[in-house]
Length: 107
Image (tube, rainbow, N blue to C red; front, top):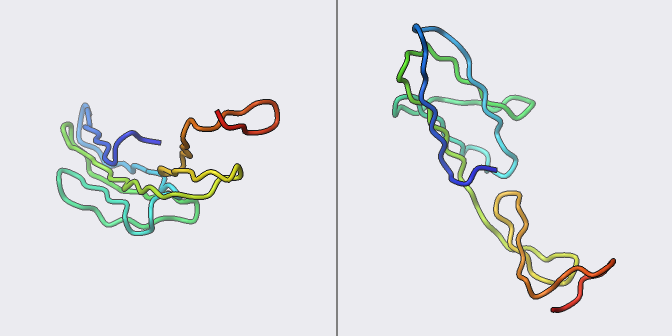
Protein backbone atom coordinates (compact mmCIF):
# COMPACT_ATOMS: atom_id res chain seq x y z
CA UNK A 1 0.00 0.00 0.00
CA UNK A 2 1.36 3.44 -0.82
CA UNK A 3 1.74 6.03 1.95
CA UNK A 4 0.27 8.86 -0.14
CA UNK A 5 -2.48 9.08 -2.73
CA UNK A 6 -0.13 10.18 -5.52
CA UNK A 7 3.06 8.62 -6.86
CA UNK A 8 5.24 10.33 -9.46
CA UNK A 9 7.72 8.75 -11.89
CA UNK A 10 10.19 10.70 -14.01
CA UNK A 11 11.56 8.96 -17.08
CA UNK A 12 15.31 8.75 -17.64
CA UNK A 13 15.77 7.47 -21.20
CA UNK A 14 18.80 7.47 -23.50
CA UNK A 15 16.52 8.14 -26.48
CA UNK A 16 12.82 8.65 -27.15
CA UNK A 17 10.91 5.40 -27.48
CA UNK A 18 7.42 3.92 -27.53
CA UNK A 19 6.52 1.65 -24.60
CA UNK A 20 3.65 0.53 -22.36
CA UNK A 21 3.43 1.07 -18.62
CA UNK A 22 1.04 -1.05 -16.56
CA UNK A 23 -0.36 -0.19 -13.15
CA UNK A 24 -2.45 -2.47 -10.98
CA UNK A 25 -5.90 -1.05 -10.18
CA UNK A 26 -6.22 -1.89 -6.47
CA UNK A 27 -9.54 -3.29 -5.26
CA UNK A 28 -9.70 -0.59 -2.56
CA UNK A 29 -9.82 2.19 -5.17
CA UNK A 30 -13.39 2.90 -6.29
CA UNK A 31 -14.02 2.28 -10.00
CA UNK A 32 -13.38 5.43 -12.00
CA UNK A 33 -11.31 7.17 -9.31
CA UNK A 34 -7.79 6.07 -10.33
CA UNK A 35 -6.19 8.82 -12.41
CA UNK A 36 -3.00 8.79 -14.50
CA UNK A 37 -1.37 11.90 -15.93
CA UNK A 38 1.54 12.23 -18.33
CA UNK A 39 3.26 15.61 -18.19
CA UNK A 40 0.21 17.03 -16.38
CA UNK A 41 -2.37 15.81 -18.91
CA UNK A 42 -4.86 13.16 -17.82
CA UNK A 43 -4.73 9.92 -19.82
CA UNK A 44 -7.82 7.82 -20.60
CA UNK A 45 -7.54 4.44 -18.86
CA UNK A 46 -9.49 1.21 -18.87
CA UNK A 47 -9.13 -1.60 -16.34
CA UNK A 48 -8.55 -5.03 -17.91
CA UNK A 49 -9.85 -8.41 -16.66
CA UNK A 50 -6.78 -8.79 -14.41
CA UNK A 51 -7.27 -5.35 -12.78
CA UNK A 52 -4.44 -3.61 -14.64
CA UNK A 53 -4.50 -0.36 -16.57
CA UNK A 54 -2.02 0.24 -19.36
CA UNK A 55 -0.80 3.44 -20.95
CA UNK A 56 1.19 3.48 -24.18
CA UNK A 57 3.58 6.36 -24.50
CA UNK A 58 6.06 7.83 -26.89
CA UNK A 59 8.31 8.66 -23.98
CA UNK A 60 11.13 11.14 -23.74
CA UNK A 61 13.66 11.59 -20.98
CA UNK A 62 12.22 13.95 -18.39
CA UNK A 63 8.58 12.98 -19.00
CA UNK A 64 6.61 12.74 -15.76
CA UNK A 65 3.98 10.06 -15.12
CA UNK A 66 1.79 10.51 -12.05
CA UNK A 67 -0.82 8.12 -10.67
CA UNK A 68 -3.46 9.02 -8.12
CA UNK A 69 -4.91 6.24 -5.95
CA UNK A 70 -7.60 7.85 -3.76
CA UNK A 71 -7.56 6.40 -0.25
CA UNK A 72 -10.78 6.05 1.70
CA UNK A 73 -11.27 5.06 5.31
CA UNK A 74 -14.24 3.44 7.01
CA UNK A 75 -15.15 1.77 10.26
CA UNK A 76 -16.20 -1.84 10.58
CA UNK A 77 -17.09 -4.28 13.32
CA UNK A 78 -14.26 -6.66 14.19
CA UNK A 79 -14.73 -10.23 15.40
CA UNK A 80 -13.74 -9.17 18.92
CA UNK A 81 -16.76 -6.87 19.26
CA UNK A 82 -14.59 -3.81 18.92
CA UNK A 83 -14.99 -1.19 16.21
CA UNK A 84 -12.13 -1.21 13.75
CA UNK A 85 -10.77 1.36 11.34
CA UNK A 86 -10.00 0.34 7.75
CA UNK A 87 -7.60 2.46 5.65
CA UNK A 88 -7.54 1.01 2.14
CA UNK A 89 -6.79 -2.63 3.01
CA UNK A 90 -5.05 -2.09 6.36
CA UNK A 91 -7.14 -2.78 9.45
CA UNK A 92 -6.28 -0.69 12.49
CA UNK A 93 -7.82 -0.77 15.93
CA UNK A 94 -7.16 0.71 19.36
CA UNK A 95 -4.82 -0.63 22.00
CA UNK A 96 -7.65 -1.27 24.47
CA UNK A 97 -7.46 -5.00 23.70
CA UNK A 98 -4.49 -7.36 23.47
CA UNK A 99 -4.18 -10.90 22.25
CA UNK A 100 -3.43 -13.55 24.90
CA UNK A 101 -3.31 -17.17 23.82
CA UNK A 102 -6.39 -17.72 21.70
CA UNK A 103 -8.53 -14.80 22.78
CA UNK A 104 -8.60 -11.01 23.00
CA UNK A 105 -8.65 -9.58 26.52
CA UNK A 106 -9.19 -6.04 27.71
CA UNK A 107 -5.97 -4.30 28.83
